Length: 69
Image (cartoon, rainbow, N blue to C red; front, side):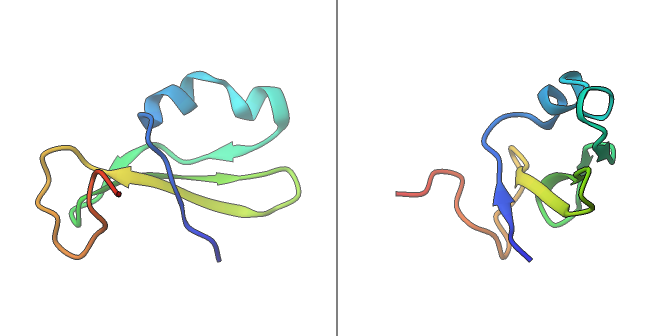
């Protein structure tokens, strides 16, 4: 498993119509209670990508800082 961190809002990804253009499947963008906003993308070959970013104004409990060095 590989975690990818995104630095752009997930709504932008939804607006790209990846499902229609490439046959990918997407879950809705969700703000998790542990301070990560994420979605899942399953590409046409079946690889499951969990993509997320720190949720703005959420306490940084057990997560990476918002602005890494």
